[in-house]
Length: 179
Length: 179
Length: 258
Image (cartoon, rainbow over all chains, first blue to last red; front, side, top):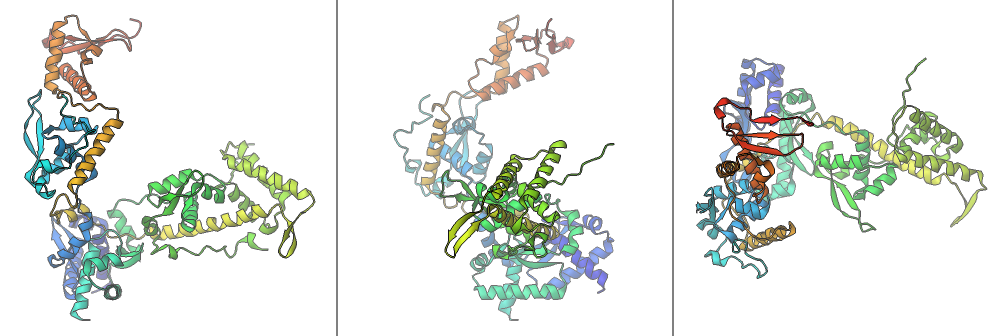
């Protein structure tokens, strides 16, 4: 391996390290000014070296480009690394869920009326996670969709039925009652 | 090097690859279940290996943890790939930051006392760039806000910890120093 | 003859004083106060001439310098210390401030160097979204309990009360189509046109006003209505367009005074 090849390898490694996306050959050519043969050769060397040296990562060809990737056997460690950031529910989604839980069935417009802000993204998240479901349409102009909580909702919160939800204090007037 | 050490190295490499923030020793201990000695030894081996093998990146100790970093000589290539950095700090902001770094936690009034001028706009810039944070209130009349530096501050200046700040000593060849 | 004054800019009065001490090679522990006050005032004067906007702190310092200068003319004041009697120097406080400020100013230059070398180093980038997507949370609610739902809902109710909102859910908002129909009905009943404000009057919420307005725009776009304003900022009238096929202008505006 000559010095030129060593430099090419180093530059490619530096670029792969700083890229969160796969780097295409054309991007690498444009950035480095090297010819494709030179780049492909260096990538090949690097891939070989990593195997020989028993590195904890490899260079993968994916989606028309190259990127660093880890091995499946290390997934449990990486999971522990990201676990604290695995979102549970954002405060906004929790608020919307609480409104649906206590006021179901309820339309989007009614939720927004209560919160004073749009609830669309929270409603979508809750639908995706199967915590709420569409439970029909309201008999009102526009026939808006009604939302209710799911069986999974009860399961995750350890409730037998909706009656098990902590009771609201007497002062906490029920919005949907006085119509 | 035994198999156990090899596995430790691989796991650490995989974790560093998946982390865009410095990984602290305590996080590494918690994730891997290894003892600190084992981890520090493996990190040391990796750092050595990378130098010997002429890798295009290194494991650097910064802001209380470890992360993969590139070398200054490759900056021209990387700058073509990643979004440009935010502009550098003004002399005024650097002065205010230096006062906060050495005197933290410190109030606005205390900074202004030292600089002889208002520090508001610099404090705002530094807050926006997450180099300083509000760290409580001083037990004094008006309960003024106290400011301290952040982990991003350490990252920004390439410091491992606040102990790495250059010593606060009068300059040597300063003409106004001759008594 | 015209010439340009190039005046250095300073971070503050202390910065300016340090500059004067440095350029005139003065002893910071024994500042010739009359001389430096003169130099300082000269700078302020020049700054004023070229309209350089200096903060009030520069004037406060000018006052301080003059006060020290005056005190220097008075007989020395003495202060008793443990070692005996010591002369009080009116410059002491200023010197102390200058020394302290100089420390941080010099350190800021160190930070600048560190910043410069650090801008050439880049760190690992990770596509967080993709990484997190690889590990879907097994339990979508994490550690939340039913009590958290209760707390969240109470907070919602509290915020509602704070917004001064009565806790009522009125009838559902009408759709765009319904607003359009309602608007056409109203217009049909009032041949000569309806005031724009009256059209929106039945709306009960901001959302409804917005929908009604959108409905009006939609009707205009379709050429089913046209609007007329007789004077600038005057009443806007909305009328049914009885000759849509003629492509009558949807907007008719008559300038003020007409």
